[in-house]
Length: 113
Image (cartoon, rainbow, N blue to C red):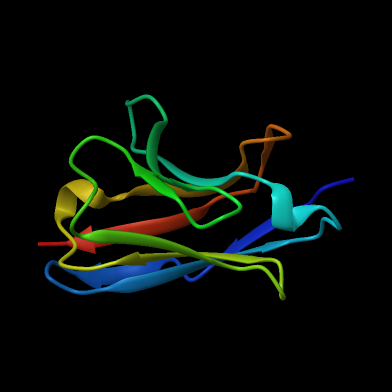
């Protein structure tokens, strides 16, 4: 069974950076489309970024520019680099196997003003 484990969340001041990591236990990871999503309190879950098996990327609305997604095919890892963070980026961030519809447990990111 596919398992996704996120790490790297925490508390950061506005303007700071964080790098989230997602470890996937999946022999077929290299062919999967992987994504990062986030859910803020009282809001719907939304796409942050998605990356295909060849490294092609897609970003959610207003996400491109401050966020970057990457993957390590050899180590079954997906990363989300977040720069110039803003208080409105505060949310639980989830790793998602878009191909198999599997979610990680989420990691909290809190940006203080």
